[in-house]
Length: 197
Image (tube, rainbow, N blue to C red; front, side):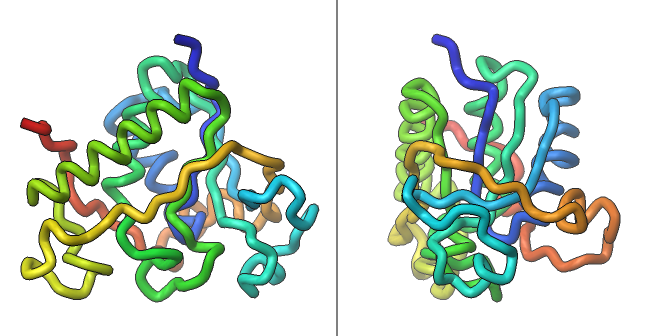
């Protein structure tokens, strides 16, 4: 199996997505990430080209705020980065992360190749099983019902082939590294990926 080193993830606001992958993921797996860039990707390959940040924020272009990263060793770390992705955002809230609502904030995995697609689908299915078994709780259905909703929430993360990546402006790159008190609604929701059995 030869897994592509290019990984594209949407987990709400891309500032937090970049910080959690570039800083926190690498605390667990030092040196695993070669590079990161935030930007936009549209699931529709015929979507608008070169959208501006304002256009994407309007929710009218169909683009998702994403982090594009290059892994040093995708065979070792692709599945791990997907599991970590599910640990720092809520994949049960369709097109929403906390106060950020709209299709641009969707939970999304854009795949680059069949091997990535198979792994992404398997990890998503495994997460749903863990939620059904009440081993992972994002706060119930849509994060509203708390423990009463455990086991009822659905993983809404979408998976589709990667299209053209449009890099965001320089001031958006490494935003939370430059502005440590900047806006971020991500947080670690569970620290270790539970065993299925």
